[in-house]
Amino acid sequence: MIETFFSTQLPVDEQFALRRHVLRGKGRKDRTRRFCIVTGTHGDELEGQMVCYEVGRRVMVEPERLCGTLEIYPALNPLGIDTIQRGIPNFDLDMNRIFPGDPQGSMAEQAAYSVVQELQGADMVIDIHSSNLYLRETPQVRINVLHEAMLVPHAITLGVDFIWVHDAATVLEATLAHTLNQGGTPCLVVEMGVGQRINHKMCNRLVDGIFRLMAQMNFWQTGETDAKADKTPCPGAEITTPIVCRGDSVAFLNAAVSGVFLTEKKTGENVAEGEEIGQIVSPLTSQVLCRVTAPCSGYLFTVRAYPIVYEGSLMARVYKTPHE
Image (cartoon, rainbow, N blue to C red):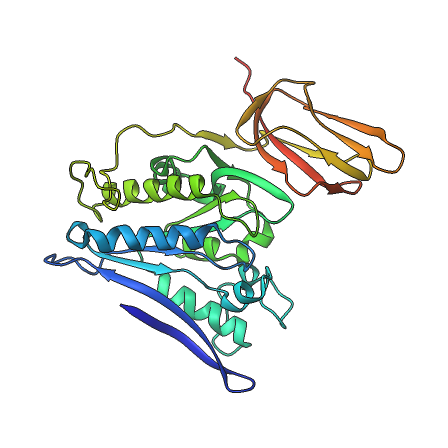
């Protein structure tokens, strides 16, 4: 069932509406339990679009396996998606910095308030993001240290490569995930890929992880793997054991000079201290302006995708390998 849970008038007889796809299990007494998938907060992050499509498609193929209620919110910022903009057009703001919203505020604040009201009380919320145009991220879950105990076990079940338990920061207080977690509604933030693109392999892997988590939380009945391609496989026991990164275990590589950053490195690779990650070059003089080397041995989970850099631009993040 497609439901509109927020709607308001726009200029020139247009309507701003937020919609969700609600799928309810049949023959199940406990239908008040809810598993929610949310994405599209930033209009230039598109990985979640494929995830929403694929999760809904698999459930509709075998609806008898669904227990409780699955709610899919594919576009919290539909105007941003339509115009390929990160924020909400004409408001010059990042939607993920105005939660919990305000029922008496601007249109964007009212929409944010409505989103929180709809999601709060759910048993689990998966908030899916891509990176921006500048950085490529390995599939990861980001968790505020305040909610580590509640969320890390669920994040491990998703089977991503990396779990980043980061310190609390003031700006995070206005995000959807922080608002929900502070209110007692568990919310996992997934980050992967690069802006304005869809990586099918990453998306399908996350979809499998979501079904695995749904099965663990008794939202999805497992069964034998079906040979047909359009059937949902039973979530298997073999999953990636993610790296769990805490505290100050991340090294940031920022550009020392301006130029063009060239690299052959991919996210998910291990690097040694002093190993060359890339070069910053000058197309005008054909000179190497700076050799970018790993400041420590570790796991490369962020690599710059957009090659033009200026002094201070982020080029990579490395998880520092703990000393034995």
